[in-house]
Length: 146
Length: 146
DNA sequence: GCTTGATCTAAAGTGAACTTGAGAAATGAG
DNA sequence: CTCATTTCTCAAGTTCACTTTAGATCAAGC
Image 1 (tube, each protein chain N blue to C red):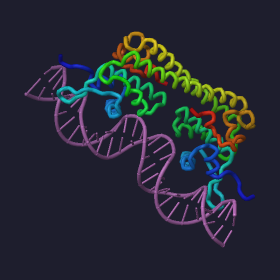
Image 2 (image 1 turned 180 degrees about the horizontal axis):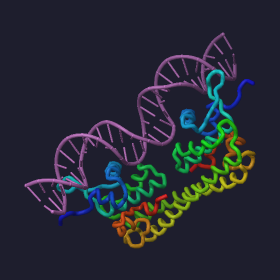
Image 3 (image 1 turned 60 degrees about the vertical axis):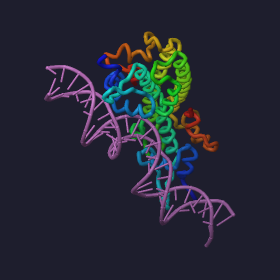
Image 4 (image 1 turned 90 degrees about the vertical axis):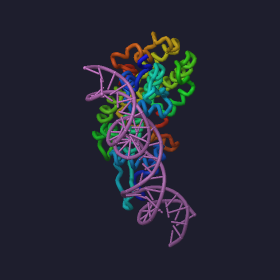
C-alpha cells in the first residue's frame, strides 16, 4: 500500500479550505490526523465529514470553540454512528429554526418600515423601541436578541 | 437650556452598547455627535436610529464597513427621509431573503440527514458532496455559498 | 538520483471589532 | 463649593479566525 488516507492537500482541495486553516482546525480539535513515516498528516473520510460539519456550523455563526464542543462526543478515528449525527443534527436543527425565525421577524418588521418610512416613529416596530420605549432600557435588542 | 441632546451614557443605556463601542462606531462614521461647550459628545434621536440600524445590520453579518457605506447616503445631522429608509430597507430586505433561503436550504438538507444518519453517504445532500463529488472541487460550500 | 512540489514546525502578522488603562477635565446632585 | 460620576483622548491590549514567513524535510515523477 503506497499511501493510506488523504493528504492535507487532498483535504484542502475537497473542502475548499486553505491548508493552513485545516492545520489551525487541528489545534482546536476539529480533525485528528494520524502521521505517516515521514511525519506528514494523513486523513480519513471522517475528517472530511468533520470539516464539512465545521464549515456549515461556522456559517451559522457558531464560534470554533462551540463547534469543537459539539464534536467532542464524536468518535475521533472512525465514522460517527447514526446516533451521533442524530444528536448533533437535532441540536443544529433547533439552532437553524431559531435563526430563521429571528430573521423572518426582522424582515417582516422591515417590510412595515418600507411602507411607513420610519419617520413618524409611531408605527415602526423595528426602530420605535429606542425612542418611545427608551425608559425600559430595551434598545433594538428586543427585536434581535437570540 | 441646561442640556441639549443625549450624552454618550444615555445612548449606551438606550442601545445596550458599551460607551467605548459607541465611540468606536464614531470613528467608522456610524454616528456623528456634536460637542458641547465642555467638549463632551451630544447625540440626537437620529443617532439612536443609526445605532439601531447598525446593530441590526451587524446581526445579519454585515461588516461595519458595509454598514457605514449604507449610511453614507443618509443625512448626518437630521432624520433621514422616507426615501432614504426605503432605499436602505429594500437592500436589507433582499439580504434578509437571501439569508433566510440559505438557512432553510441548510435546514431541509439537515432534516434529510437526521433520517439517513449520514452513514451511507449515498442520500445525504449535506455531507455527500465531499465524498462522491470530490472530483469537481465542490465541498460543503455548494450548499452554503451565499 | 534528481528535482519539483508538497508538507513540516514555530512564530509572527492580519483584520475585524472592540475593550482597557491612564491621567485629566467636565458634569451635576447635595 | 464639593465630590462622586461621567466623559475626554489616545495608545495599547484582546479575541477570533486565520494567513504568512522561513527554513527544513518529504514525496514522487522522470
